[in-house]
Amino acid sequence: MSQEFFPKVTTIAYEGPKTKNRLAFRHYNADEVVAGKKMKDHFRFAVAYWHTMKNSLADPFGVGTAIRPWDDGSKSVENAKRVADACFEFLQKLGVEYYCFHDRDVSPELGDLQASNDALDEVSDHLLKLQKATGKKLLWGTACLFSHPRYNQGAATSPCADVFAYAAAQVKKAMDVTKKLGGQGYTFWGGREGYASLINTDMKREVNHLAALLHMAVDYKKAIGFKGQFYIEPKPREPSTHQYDSDSAACLNFLREHNLLGDFKLNIETNHATLAGHTVQHDLTVAANAGALGSIDANAGDELIGWDTDQFPTNIYMTTQIMLVVLKMGGFKTGGLNFDAKVRRESFEPVDLFHAHIGGMDAFARGLKTAAGLIKDGVLDKFVAKRYSSYDSGMGKKIEKRQVGFAQLEKYALGLKNPMPGSGRQEMLENIINDYLQ
Ligand code: XUL
Ligand code: CO
Image (cartoon, rainbow, N blue to C red; front, side, top):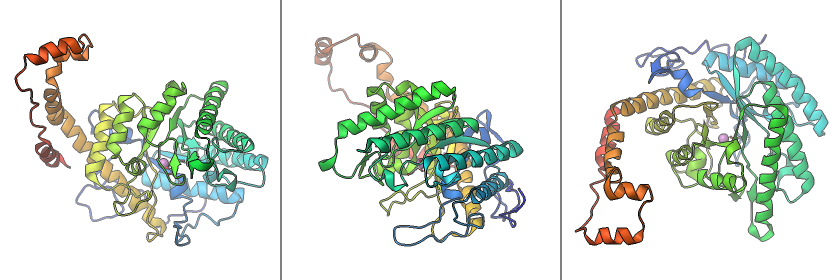
């Protein structure tokens, strides 16, 4: 790494809540042990290459504003290598261990598939060199199957079989590169795997094609001995009007129906869950209950804008709820918290990338501490256990064990006076959470 791209920024250190330095952590202290584990190992933070290194910050109404001295906008391998250098300088100065990428963020899409593959080989050699020199790791890789015009009607769900074939070839190569870089996972996000209108769509056929591509990926994974975890990332819409992997429940049903559940976990993104009309803790809980919560794309949406704004997470209440689910499932195995987030179009200077990530990491540190406190004292858990305690014995236990049917329950109910549950005490519990907020 010859050139420095963030010359005014030194390593971001933990300086505690009282520091006046904006380029320091107030709460995230990588090696501090919380709930039996170092903070950095709870989170396994990752930087999203597409947003942090490559996003020009264009929006539907205006061109990009971002100042990115590492990117000359050309499709040269030389430029791609320079962007990689900048990424690793950023990871090192920020103290983040992982990154995530699409094939086309790290390396250019060229005239034909062979040329694009050759470029990716060269750039991934460079990435491997940088990983070895710095100890940084790949959390997951993926293929971009939504930007190029050929994917305008989907990739695996395109009505054109040749497009399916091209997508399969791209996934194959992206898996090869992910394996080469020791990636701990591989994500499938089907941005255009859906439809704009049902008038021209054979939904049944499209969904079967999507399952076919995923089965081929599972077969190929075994063939090359790739040990990373496969993830599906749900999102209900945007860019498609309707996306087949719309939320956790839809993904789990799809995976079950097509006999893929054993091979995939979910990568849940906050802003996608809210677009689906859920909270992030809802989609995380649905995934975790199925033993299928693999990784998280950490970001936040905007209540007033109806699209995927991919903002950095700063809401401590939300990070607490995310960390409650993560701690209760026993932490990440292959996954982590990938900041799939971009700075605002107004925040166009390189240093804004540091402010954004510092804010997200500090917000998660506070969420972790709050969640760990709530779990340690068992305040919510005790209440919830008591709320359902009528199922621990007697007729409730028989219901859970499915030892009774309607006839016995009718006989039993005829002997009851006026069954009523206790108060749900939502407000009291909300007050308790506020007492624990760090
Ligand atoms: C798009 C999105 C993607 C995936 C990876 O909304 O979240 O960046 O995370 O393809
Ligand atoms: Co994402």
